[in-house]
Length: 444
Image 1 (cartoon, rainbow, N blue to C red):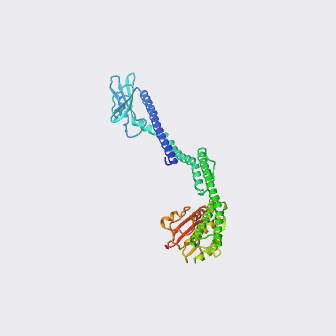
Image 2 (cartoon, helix red, strand yellow):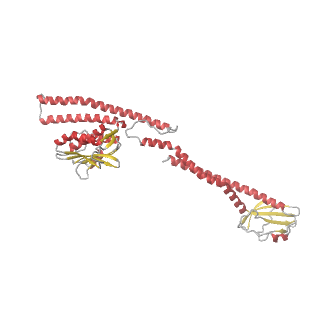
């Protein structure tokens, strides 16, 4: 069974069609039996009501019969005297032998006949009628009886379609309620209408599963946040102690060794900060969304990274595409803090991987789907086989440089999904550099 709706409709309509066929057959058989009784009564009545003075000469006055038509009086009357001589028979009618008293069925002249014979005082009367007259009348009676059934069948099919659709509607409500939820939403299922008894166990099981997932997710976020928080303070203290020891001469070693130690500490501190950011973003909900200027946010972030870019002689700038005017603020509905984290991560990655004297551009663009934010650089890009995995947590490509933790793009991707935006990472069409964008941000 691949479809409950198809299964229900198939069996209900098939059952209805079978029941109608059986009913039609029964009605036809009943009409046929009633027609037979009626015609038998007619034969008996005609035989008993014939006048006693019918003579052989009267046969010339009887009309001939064309058996191709339909008529209730299609009868053949034969009369024999006491000596057995046929004294009356219609002209041009098939001659039937004397059958005997009572009702009989015989085949004669290519027709099947129903015959009734009665012995009277000085004669024997036999009245016959072809069976096709009875069959045609039975068919007429059956059709007159079946036409309401023919009207009832499509009405019943339409009613079945309507009832099945209404009966399965709660499944559609449940599907739409689940499809419309955010990927990270673990709230209980809420339907627009009361939940039917048959679906309530499924909804309750889903709510229980979501509650357990929420508890597990919360425990994971709490652990990550606590671990990162506990690591950040002693790591910062350790870095200060190493720097103090180097300055007062108590820590001896080559410059390269001390630089490597400091680099490892910086990387661990950066990882702890990213873990805290990731835990905070996992816990955020859309309640923090409000109208904000994406242009203003980009200007602030570009200003914050300007000194880092100047240290590598990188041309860092903000470009506006399809702006409505010089003062277009590119207003969107979003979380300013989360979007600042997204843009900071993208700028940090771009500047770190862009060579000396390169260029990094932040672009804002209006399109039919909303507003798109993109960061373009002219660094080495990413190998084609690694593009699909760069947004995985803790994944760093084979050619990754600097002190990254493998969480920057994962956090940016999560923030974009929370804003219902499409996040993409691709090598630039020019063949040099990377383009990372979040498109479809909802305009305010």
